[in-house]
Length: 288
Image (cartoon, rainbow, N blue to C red; front, side):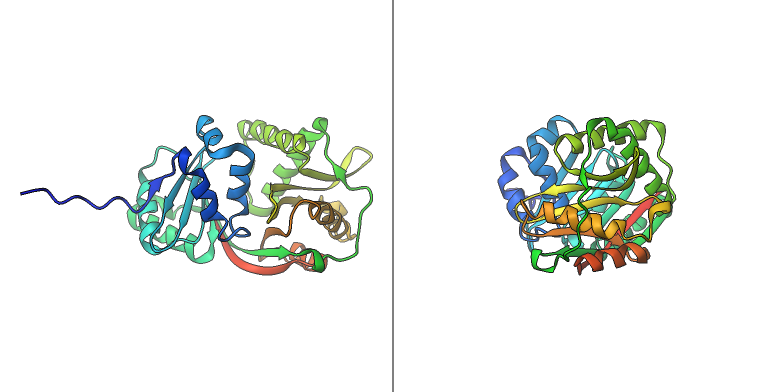
């Protein structure tokens, strides 16, 4: 008797020759997947694999699904069905790469965490877990506010910007940046500055506003890292600078997205004032 052929795995790593198909799958929901599309645009799948930076996984049934894990411990998922989530959880539970945080739409993130907890009690050790709201801005909704002094950051400002990002991390989620992580943070800021993707407002050598584009694609740009030092808040700085940043970004992007913690009411109010509207509920889960 012939042995029955086993069914091919539903979830599998993506090879370099499948990059076009991977991008096509992500572009079904370009606003939701702007971060992953930005990674592929900046580095290509071959480049990411050569750097040993991260792994993409793909499933096609019942619809195209993309899952991603990188060396920083970040896991990002597109819209994913329960069977694929269960398979990915088993992979993460035994993977050599350490998972430190999950970012996905609400249902997917909670489903993955539930599957991980079923596999091992170590996944119950959560540092922070908070809902986020995905927001989108179209050109017609952008307000007329502006900030003429907003500019691209310069290479020599990378360390100062990284210090601001570390302050924001401590303030928003209570996590301190270790020395080795700070060095990597400075390098990542330098990379974004070189690509003209970091915007700042500075006065007398002090940053009053900073934010960057984690993705700058024809269909969508994605803003991250928005931060204003506490002493400069409630003065309209964030609103004016965001409006100016978005106006510049619309020169190359059809729309702009970002995520904001739902508990961060001042930031959310600023985004609404600029013209952003809600489009998707996210969840960020950070493990110990």
